[in-house]
Image (cartoon, rainbow over all chains, first blue to last red; front, side):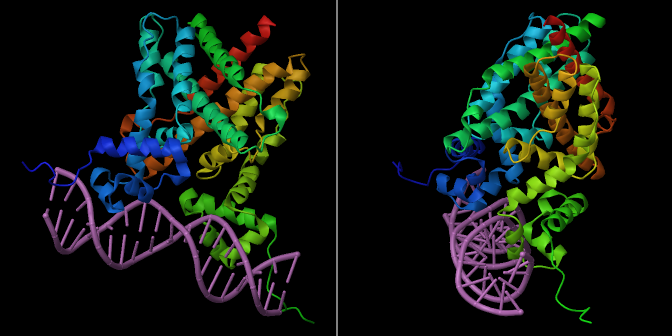
Length: 195
Length: 195
DNA sequence: ACCTGAACACCGTTCAAGT
DNA sequence: ACCTGAACACCGTTCAAGT
């Protein structure tokens, strides 16, 4: 049998998965097409058979990072709580990999990836008779806040690791995140009450 | 008289100002140290006399973009209105230059530039007896939402200019921005009412 | 004080050609 | 279908040296 035949080939998913691992291990600045190719045992040009360009590859990585948010179940949850659950899950998902929020921020802005927050809040809103327009507005506020906050937070984490933060900057800001998200949720509740 | 003497020299401000113009005319991807040097009639290495690295230069450009936010006056303004005024001014400032929100987003995240929202809301809060902690939380929510939203919005503007948007994506989202910002302001009002 | 010249160590992307 | 090899057109940064 020809068991030691042709060299192993990579799927699109293999490439995206390896990119995610490189991101987590070495950070976004070192996630180059050349490093990725080397990690896959392939020439840089081979990557362009799987993806048209680097942005498309990064969008695929963003999708993987955001996957857990799509799994969250918020049906029959009151709207303000749904905001906390979805926003919280997105926060967790972004913190799970190094530099994830920076990467996702640009993929979202470029429109190469859809907000996972919007469909979730839409479901929760509809089961409670809240207009789509209102949940859309809330989804925008939540998504941009969570991504921006986590981006900022994640940079503080690396600054801390490098030991260049003042001691009063080193306290955990997890509580602040929840407070701000709660404030947005309360704003939504107030908007609903007025309808 | 030696009126046609030594060649013109550049100040740090000259360099930052030219960078801002290049950003606005050609966008962030084309704002390279080499292009900037050429525009200034200088060698790329000359820029490193004025700034230690590109990030520091970009931070200086971010400061220029955000300058109008520091000029806004919110003393004696009720807190929810202060949020709308400061957030609105930040939105305007970011829209004034091409790719400004993307640039400012990363400068803020890296901690190379301070949030202009925080000190403004702090003043408004204190004149009304609102605790600093509360205005800080609001400042975080406002800043991250405004920067993220405007980043997304500014990318839609270039996509529209390139003619690659569906017609239902082309409607102005200015009203949505105000609605979301208002929702955050109402969340703050609700938090204040509970104190 | 401000800048040149030259180099170093990289990038993303294309494309003809191979298997 | 998946990849190689080689090239193209760039990057940011350093540093000795000039004026």
